[in-house]
Image (cartoon, rainbow, N blue to C red; front, side, top):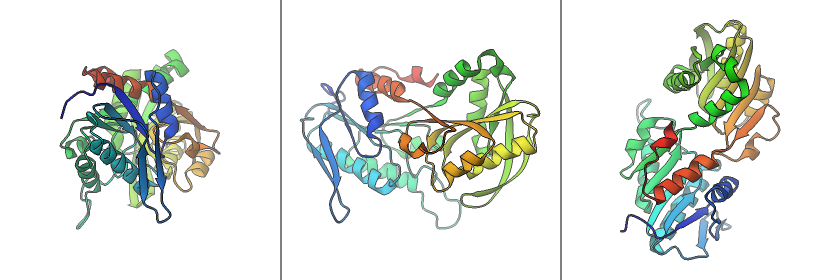
Length: 319
């Protein structure tokens, strides 16, 4: 196995082709000709219509809804490239599904994130490129190199331009204790204060907000999280910092907008003035809610792909 392909070839599945096309535009190349379809019984079929022999192949596919179909698309694309003698195969997974199942929370729980990592490795991927893993230790579940990009710089740049010097008077709020480290890093880059919403989760996708740790009274706040699924935690936290903490206004941002079930309705009816999301998942998921704004990660992924191909450091992208 050679460590460097002779040229770049980029293919995509059906999960987020718009992002893949945008990444290709940034790099200055065309999207590889391929077809990923489903047979009548639900089986996934992959056809590559151009040679990949000896090429540095990047397969872009977020494992998002329908999660299992998207995952199988990625695995079968990897296998197709490996059997076609690709020089190196990089699985580009902007949103890594199953990442929340990263530990045993109770007896007889699976660790599905580790299982998915094993499957991607067994399929024949040589490395993985992803963004904002729900738990950083998932990188260690792989026996191949993993580059975990951060959406942090995209949000820092956006809010620095949006609020200018007034940003230093704002407060970054972590919606739960688990996101404190992520929120602290974001707050430090913008020289903002930090607050935490303490909540008690009763059962999956439901939570009860208890109180706000930190001073948010009369201040503009930014709720910072890694993903928005049903938006229950985010909207409850927004309500708490307004009603309990006395915040002046609430903005929110998250890397991955899964937006399941009642998410759009909850965001619409919440005190959140604007929810900024990255386009790691299809922007169509946010249609119907005027409060949602998408920021593109194509430039970051495009530069990362070029740096991987050229065998140079990508640590610059973390800052």
